Image (tube, rainbow, N blue to C red; front, side):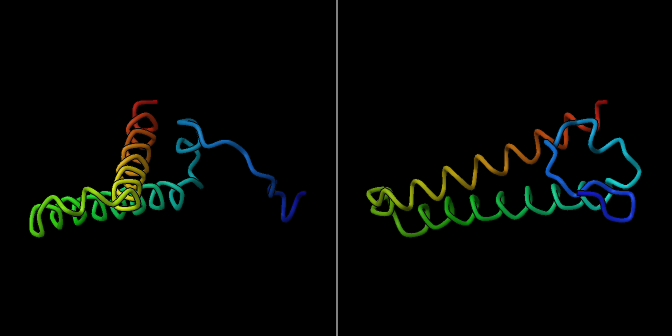
Length: 85
């Protein structure tokens, strides 16, 4: 679908995506989400340190911590790969 000369279909995000001058909002989005997920992961780790290891018995706690860490690493890796090209 084309609107105002731009394709509105989903396309995969690749390092070349950020080389486009119109990609600055996408770069800001990746930085923001990477930072937010890193902050969530740090707060989870801090809470385990502050409250003790009983939180580590909750599978949901571990799952959300691992997912937020993974999403943060993914965002920062994508940003790093994009700035190399």
